[in-house]
Image (cartoon, rainbow, N blue to C red; front, top):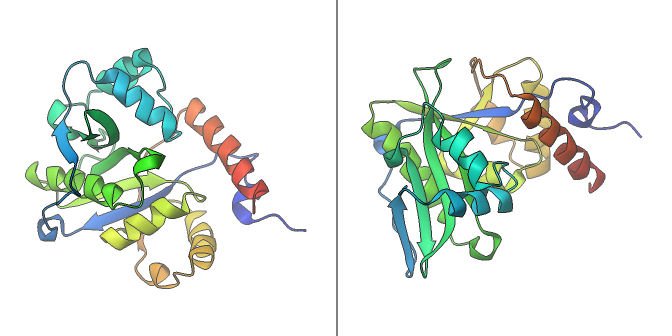
Length: 219
């Protein structure tokens, strides 16, 4: 049996898929279900973020890692980091980020919601407030990186208005495979071409290779 294209690339440098959202000024304000509160980062949130990142498989699973790699990043600002609470517990987060390599675009960063709180449009709310923050800072579009197997996340981004961004030569075929699996052929008609210039670090590449192998094994 021939392995899917993405799986056959495990021996190579695995880039993430990219998406872009334009028209940030047209986004509607966010409303939350009863019992949920949205706030910005406060000192002492490192432990809560570590737990959320660990649950979402995003890495940075200790307070030390969050402090060094996230809070210590030059893109970090408290007003860019959103934390969703329920009954005093942090249950979701998303951030608006920037990149020195791509200063014209904002980025959606580290979006996750605890599994017990999904299917309530909370991911949509978090992604939207991050995009609204980008608009407040003067950006006209926001980008994100995702992985081929994160089908639920890709559906969410498509529903918000993100479109695929062909950032390297592997992306057209990989997006075609995603479109087939999601039964969303229209996403290919909205695709754009553009460069992101982001280079994932070694740990990120290893994480994606392992996750991709597991995802393909379950197909």
